[in-house]
Image (cartoon, rainbow, N blue to C red; front, side):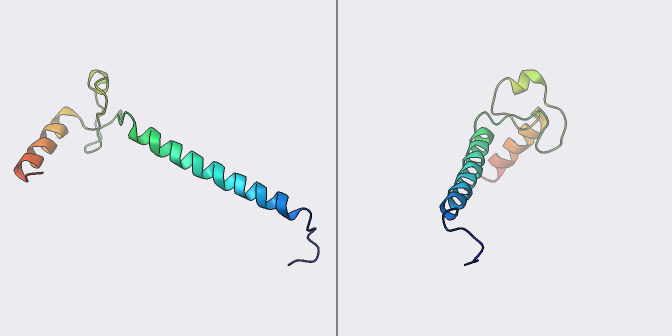
Length: 80
């Protein structure tokens, strides 16, 4: 251990490090939850074209109509 470090300060440093680590973990969890809830994009995840507001209002939309139809067709063809 570094002789210049005051042993009385050590728990405070560990507490701060633990608090920072916990805050980063909490933010990561919150970001993941936000990503899962109401997964709606302004642009298609496949082609990048804008998704009309009316379609986005349906919620849980991540593809434009054309790409969604192609995706569903592909799913039916491959039995998934």
